[in-house]
Length: 297
Image (cartoon, rainbow, N blue to C red; front, side, top):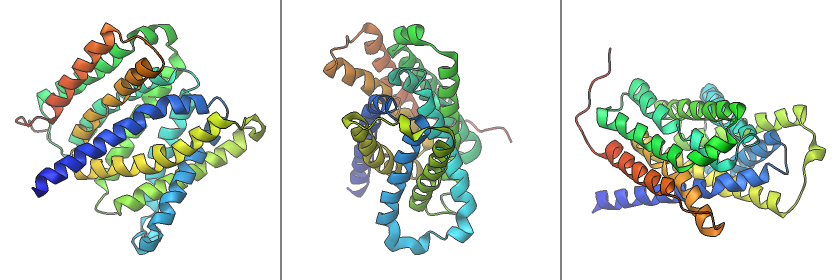
């Protein structure tokens, strides 16, 4: 019974994470139109981190900043400064949905890094599943990719995926050295502060256009998109196989496109239908238990 409850909780958290991230891309794409990208990324990360910091303050003895500051800074650079910074700038060059499609090459990179660096089991079926999943994601937006393709946008999206994958593996690899919750808190606070500093140095605060759309985007990004999503994601990563959790995130851009079809009256194309089927096959292949093969010494 306990195991079934735990599995139900895990899938519930996965579903919640997918919904949060699925609706976040268009919200962020809209918000960055009214605030320079470094400011926009920094505010979301820093305030999200402050919220979690306040919640965690009663357990501040676990923080051990003097002993663990190096872990916190490296994690902040990988998961916030690079990942969130590159992502927010990249949204300027590509539509949010298309940018997210390319960013979700991350589960493929993550699966390989988890095998190489974390010693997670790898099978031919898992590799095939990751490739099929990304193929499904590309298929969903193939028409838009051909129309809106930007070389700078593509490079920024792949850079986002790479920094995200390395950052996730780094956090999981050091989960026994540093409290995982405080790792998330400090990477948001430190990373957000760095991005805000970059905004003060390179961007003009007068370019900010305060309106309802921006305020909603910041509130959503600070609470659900950053604070809640970061805690859920790293909790799932630390408790399960990174590649398996990563495979489920293939559903995020699928959901984003599907929601747009419902609420924005966009057409559900045959590409979307086939892409959804491929993602389903991908998740099955990655999560099913098959005989692993050993990595080279």
